[in-house]
Every structure is written in C-alpha cells, then in structure tokens.
Amino acid sequence: VQLQASGGGLVQAGGSLRLSCAVSGSIYGIADMGWYRQAPGKQRDLVALITTGDATNYADSVKGRFTISRNNAKTRVYLQMNSLRPEDTAVYYCNVKTWAGLDYWGQGTQVTVSS
Image 1 (cartoon, helix red, strand yellow):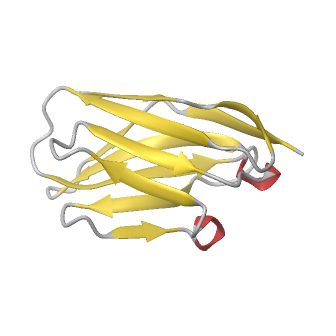
Image 2 (tube, helix red, strand yellow):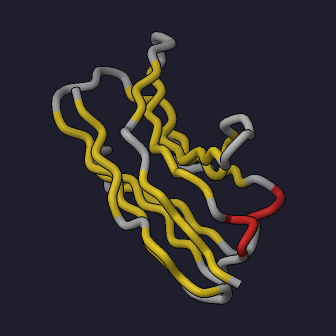
C-alpha cells in the first residue's frame, strides 16, 4: 500500500494550490481520508477530513478556504487550498484510516506561502 502526495509548491499569499493523494494497493475498510500538516518545530495537526459518509471536518484556521474531496473509489483524495496565507506553510501529509484502526500515511508534500 502506498500513498503518494503531490501538488505542493511555492505560492504567494492569496494564491491557490491543489494537493492530490493517490492510494495504490488494496486497503480494506477505509473509514476516513484526510490531510494533516506539520510546520517546522510543531506537531502534526489535522487540516481536513472526509468520512465514508462524505461528512467533512476542517481545522478552524482553514474553514472557508480549503476544501477536501475524494473519488468514489477512495483511491484519490484532494485538498483545494485557496486564499493561502504564510501560516499555511508546512509539509502536508495525506492519511487513510480504516475501520480496523490502521493508519496509512503519504510521504508529504511541501507547501510554502510567501508574504
């Protein structure tokens, strides 16, 4: 099983990026798919989550600016990031959780927002 994140880069404040995560291999019983981020010297925090029932959950700091989505096959999860701010700078990781309590992580993609 492999999660491959892409789409990060350098963008000016106010700009947009779209992150993608491709899930390869077979994961049985996917429950939630999400994005987390980790800035230097800080812990890894939840950014956005989408459940099997398509419910979404966002960190307060990104509400109204970021949108998470996935395909029906649960092989892709996306994060549309608009109105980016310098404080959004971090390494972004995609994550898959299963009903059995397993956690799968991607390798991370760097997002840098310049002021």
